[in-house]
Length: 59
Image (cartoon, rainbow, N blue to C red; front, side, top):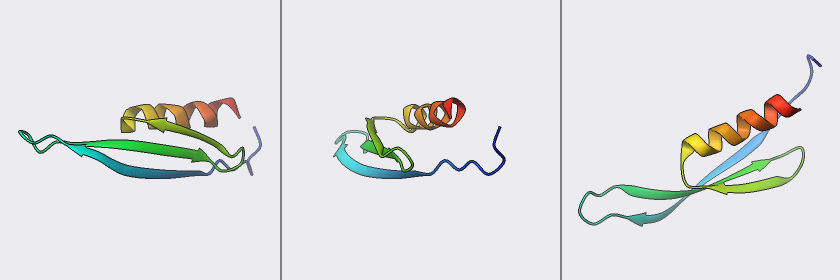
């Protein structure tokens, strides 16, 4: 393991809808892995976090 290894991400949340009855917000989450320029879209923070963890563990 390289002690100087860095993994950087840009995470962008975009509001896509608000449920009228509950007021619950729906988000589109775009995660960019800076070093590889790889972008992926998610609908939940849990999915986005799992993606970032997999990118860090695979590097």
